[in-house]
Structure formats: C-alpha cells, structure tokens
Image (cartoon, rainbow, N blue to C red; front, side, top):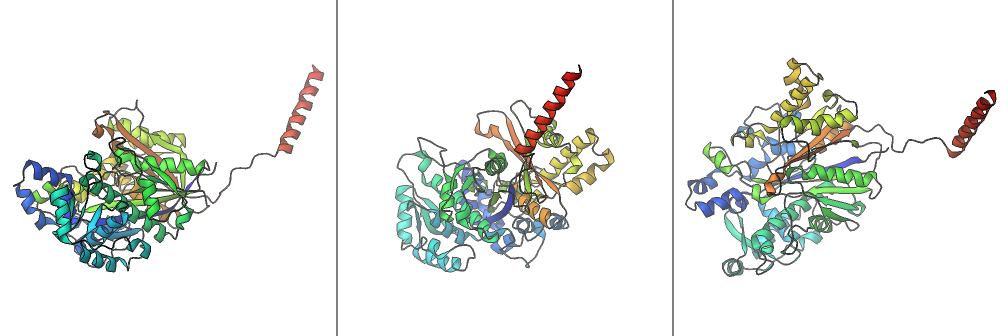
Length: 512
C-alpha cells in the first residue's frame, strides 16, 4: 500500500480590530441586549495595534517563525512579552492588516456586493502591489469610484453591512436578496470574509511551497461557515470559489462541515481521494469566522488584558501522491468517535487515540507528538476554560498509565515530551489538530520526529440536531522512501508454484 503525503502547508492570520467591535457575536449580541454596556464602551481601550499582533509570540508560531518548542521557552502570559523583532511574513504564511484584507474582501466579491470608498480603495491597491502572493489581475478587482455618501445611503436605506477601518466607515456589503434571510448583508459579509481569508491561505500555500495552481485537481473547504440560500441553506460552495480566485483552473471541489472536527475529517477525505487515485493533488482549505472575534472579550476586559481574539485564522494544506520524501498520512491508522462511543473523556480518548494505535501495534509513546485542540491558553485561561491542550495531554497520558505504556511517575514527562503549548487562535475549526501539520512536515523531513497524530474533536450538539460528540484522528509518519506498491509474485511464477503443488499432491495420492 502506498500512502498519500503532506506536500505543503500555509497558515494565515488577519488582524481585524474593527470587526471585533462590529461583527463578533459577543459584541453584536451585547449591543442588542445591553446597548449601554460598560463593556462596549471599554472595548477600544483593549484593542491591540497591528504591530502588537505581529509581535505576539503565538501568532509568530502560527505562521512558522517560531516552533512550538521555542514558544514553550517563554513564560506566560505571552501578551506581556514585548518584542519588535518579528516580521508579518512567516515560513508558512503571514499576518495581514485589516485594510489590506478589506481589499481582499472586494477581490472575493463576484456579484458587485462590496462597495469601497474610492480613496480607501486606491490606498489599499498601493499597499497590495507589494504583496508577494497577490498578482495584478486580482488587484484590478479592488478599484472603486464610490463616494462615502453612496455607501452611507446603502447602509441607511438598503440594510447594507458597514465596513470600518480605524473606526472610520470605508465601505459596505450590500444584501444579495430583498427577503432571503440567508442572503442578508450580514450573512454575505460573513461569507465573503470566509472566502477572502480562504483565498489568502490558498495563495500562501501556493507561494510558500512553489506549487503550480493548475496542478490542483480538487479542493475541500472545511471552515465552520456554510453558504447557500433559502432553498439550500448550506449548499456551498466555498471550495470552488476559492479555487477560482487562486487560479486553480483545473480544480473542482466541495465543502465539508463537522464543527471543530471538520478539518481533520477533510484531511482524511483528501488522503483517501489521493490514495484511491481519484486525484493526485487535493487541497484542504478553511477561512476565518467573524462570529468568533472577541468571543471571550468580556473576560479579557474584566481582567484588564488585551482582547486577544482579534484575528481571523485560515489554513491550506496540500495532500498529494507519495513522492518518497514528504511525510505520509497513514490511512490505515484512523481513529473515529462513532455513534456508540459515548461521551466520557476515557471513551473519547480511547476511540481517537488508542484504537488506531492498537491497529498498528503501537504504544502511546510511539507517537512523538500529539496535535490536539491547540488553543492558545493565553486566551482560554482568563476566560475560565483552562489550558485545553495540556488537559488533553494529561488525559492521553493517564490512559497510557492505565494501559501500562508508561509509569504513573512518568505522566508529566509524557505531557512535556509528547505534547505542545497551544498557539492557535480560538477560531473553532482552526485549533483542532491542523496547526501542527506544517511543523510536522518539516520535522519529519529534516528533523527528528518520526510520527505524529492529528486529532480533531467537535461538538455536534451545537446544531441542536443531536447530543453526540464528534472526533476523528490520523497518524502522520516519516516517509520511508518507498513510493510504489509492494510487488507480488509474477503470473508466471504463480503458475509454476501451482504446477509444483499439483505434482506434489498427485505424488502424495499415489503413495496412499
């Protein structure tokens, strides 16, 4: 059996302070329930500058300028660490400022729904002309001659969604239908943000890994949003629209959804498609969710720390046929939380971790690194959710003790050696397993990591359709250099073996 490989990864963040205020669900809900809220008044004081976001250690880890091991050398809280030595561009991707991203939203608009103020659009084009992954053909789509008065009219009279930069109105997203609640300006804004950030992730994947866009044959989009209309609310298709904008002219695609576990489902699906020979190059991609911006903002402000959920997150990963170099995805070692698994922590960990390991006759310690819910504890601890990755590693280690894979006294060493500090933004689908794939590829080609497990977990009950939990996992392994199927005996050899067996059988009969 020849397994597919992880051939490249791209990771992006977008600093969106104005979208925290105007589009994050915590803030928009507060504005409805308590419009005179002290929290809403205080938000501007707790928003970070772009420079602070770029120099934030977990963000630098996300785009590949720091490794998880290097991040672990710094004491928490990380938001207190002052540095001016980092770049917005990283090994795996980039951190984009809000004004440039608004230009990208305009690029993503295929139905003339986005209006940008003319001077603002000119400034954005000038900035993006120097962008290493965005070509001039895309930049022509940003040009606009709309006045701020026209934009204000769309907002006041036609329910358009305002777009702000530095607390200043610079554009709007118009509704796509007069009465369809799935095509309101608010929903269209959310959808365009997902698409634009997905495009940015795809462009970074292609650029950072020198991939020809025309080589991509299939795209699976796996964010938490779903686009459609009143007749098919989640019909899609983000995947093909992102492929179109990124110049993947030979690609088709579809969307996969599974709440936080969605990307790992998509990773396994992409691996299966490549291994089956249906496609040679499949990209899984996900854009960011505006709803999650400032999700824990109230707790952060209450504790007088910056609102750390001020970035959208996105990623893109290329899965290809075995090249003998890049790490392989062990499709024979897949864990799954089934309908009958149950929701206890032990049941979940058993189904996702030890069940696939048992298939491969492995111990828990045979996996060098576990990539679980890699949420940044700088964000979650002040909100009362604790250190999510560490909690996962303790559960895995405890199961290892029960299985006698490790001694009880080795539990915390296991957490340290086989676990990692969380560094991913709380964008729902983004933290779950996927953030480590870029590092895994590097560590398994030039480093000393031999195996990792990507674990995606999700809460299906959020959709109010079931109380079930969800999760899948897959083992990633260093490539042994063998790219072809194991060759069996030739047809001629088999004929000779059968003839010899028949002669022996006849000889045996004659002796009876």
